[in-house]
Image (cartoon, rainbow, N blue to C red):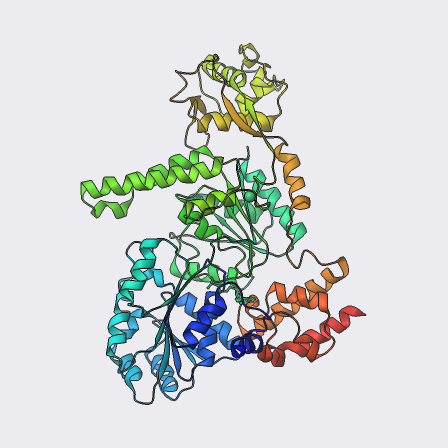
Length: 619
Ligand code: ADP
Ligand code: ZN
């Protein structure tokens, strides 16, 4: 299979296959059905695009979302492959025209929405004697399964469609969903014949995972964004919030701070959502602030960070959303800010889920119980003191243990600490007050603050006043959060959350130790230490200062080209490719071909302009 590698190099400009790719490509090439189960960003598209370029006939790709199709077709056109899509975004006239061209054999690869398969116009095309479909590739194949979250009834039509053809093309199915139920459904429903099944690990090695419990989330986010701005100016990121209101609020505040942000949630008009999404994809806005309505089918491969400003409802959602970072394989960060209140908000969503209304009483109970259990597992993730990656992979059924060196827990040293004395002081401080106060006030009392706000209210009379003055604000807040987690304390909802005794407060006793794992270093030190300790850097971040300069100017050129051609910048060249150019500094076209991500077609199209910049940069 020398040919597959040639195709990879010629069109896509890559040297090597990634895990699982070649096996899947070879199977298809030999006429064997295939099922590829690989995580997001692993490079599934290549597994059917490369065979498509090697086979005689046409490859049909079934894809559930218009945005996915658009993105992939654009990416293919960018590397000189004739591809098209047939879906409802085309007018009747455009659709007919595309079908006509398809019939003439103009397209090697055609993306089609499953709903189209059964329509007369499409069937006429598919059954045309001159048309030869070599490969039917089912992308996002988990959509055939009712077990998954993304079930699409129209995917069930794929088998009927196959039955109508006078011959049977090779069938390949691809998904990132690994559960056995879903896999079996795919095999059964699509009736794959003696398929080659390849499952690669679910680990996304390039993603750094971190959980933080900042006392002030907004401040933490601000300093994170400032840090990113310094490290990688202009890099893209997504911030997920649980509610529309939070999205609005953050968007407003961050815009006031001068950040380039946009927003996305179900409360906006279709036009605005479309516009904002494009602004993000085309790098006109750097940071997308969104609810979980955003992201399905977003293929932007250079998202450098995903911050969950609130804890999502379960690990499935979390890994999917966080997984939108770093699809290009470059190091990227996934941060989660935990706050006990998020648990309650999620519980509220579970108890009031509109979709469950239609279910009968018993089923609803089962579904709610399942959702609550998933929520519990999600909060356990936030309190794990062992490797976060290990927790994630174990959750998804991949046994793994130990140290990954690329998550916040692996980079933090913990110690078991007995906090029973502190807990006693905190509880008594709250109970002595009579009225409820927020965390800040409680912390101030315990630390013996002399502020007027506090003295004016006579808070220095509180029996616990100053009793914990030896603790830092951060440490004290950590303990309070831990007590809330363990339900000794409760924190109210609302704009001014107040602390009051939790369900277990009555049973609290100072006789037995109460332990928690406390990070040895404080939050502040840790935040500073992370970048130094972290093993991996993006290709761009690893550049020297001079090269960095060049990198920025190549990015500017990329933007200019993207604008001229009206495609997202990452489809011109990825950051990784630009960084590789800065390192290799090609002097001619031949050397340019050595750069990862530069294939023949892009070479023709862009090499001269980039070479000119590199030449200037060297002077
Ligand atoms: P998936 O569909 O599995 O989420 P994609 O097919 O979108 O992943 O690929 C993710 C990214 O990885 C794309 O930018 C793609 O160009 C890149 N990629 C795929 N295969 C390779 C490879 N063999 N070498 C380098 N980059 C690759
Ligand atoms: Zn780890």
